[in-house]
Image 1 (tube, one colour):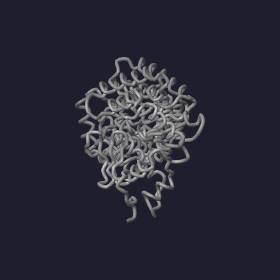
Image 2 (image 1 turned 90 degrees about the horizontal axis):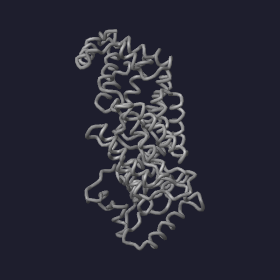
Image 3 (image 1 turned 90 degrees about the vertical axis):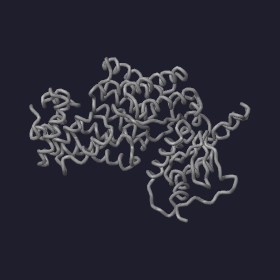
Image 4 (image 1 turned 180 degrees about the horizontal axis):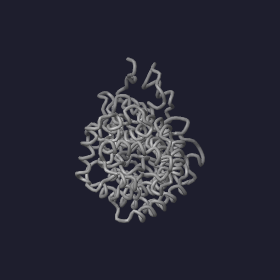
Length: 435
């Protein structure tokens, strides 16, 4: 049957992936506790293929032939499935490695019952499949969400990139790696107070750094906790947060200049410093290193908006939304980016539909500010009645709010951005917001 994996023999029916079990006959991925882990059918088929060839590089052509036989699909389909698999596996997701220009490799997890010497031989045998000499030990695994905006509720696909450090990468079970994943889980949990979540995550990232002082991803993730606290207004000392974030991001770049996460962290610092041109360059570097860094690509669009170039912002944001999974946790933020661009350009409904949909999700701007953007878009569309209702609703919570106060808190000082933002203030004036 087209699109189905080849039948498996009895020995291949149940496969181990770290602490997970892949039941190929029932087409189920079971977690460490035996509960089913949801995966889309294509992602499950890809994981099955990689598990059957564990320890060997599986090329993109082989993947396309096995998972999408006879169909014309792009490499982005593979990238999306790889990202979903890594997220489903959690810490074990680091066993799935990207081998640049070759494909993907599912690293067999060490058998805890095997003697140390046997485990060591197994590691060396699998490692030889990645290449020879120092090119092997220069691989570092990165699993992160690369969005450095104030709301960062979920991870994005992983990347494996060469760095200059000749030490072997932390294994999936290393203390630093486990602490990193625990910190990410704490930072991105949907429940609880955001500030408390970020502080809890920061403590774990700091422990990861103490366990592995040259572990660049931990420095980058710790930097994000500082930029998030400052961006969200939850920090009592934003200037101190910025200084700490800058030091951590620079250390991360010095340790691993070819990891996308470190450039995204540096971009977050530049944003706090109101340096959109430098942040734009850093985000572009992150995407150049790893095309699957969808949040960084979308943030390229946001930097273009802050620089007064909304026409160029739409394409990268739409591309990120098209390549990422349908319910990506940053969708609310990306819809807000598109809405602002369309409002500034005067396109279509001035972004009203984007803002309305963004209000259904978390995003980097507060809900009230997004309501004001929606009000401006509706007013410019001629729907002044609903627009006025939204403005009154916001002013009931913030009676001191005026257009002048909004101007004082603008997100960019760039003349082009400020000129484009006049569309917002024209709409809000029509909606009845006092100047």
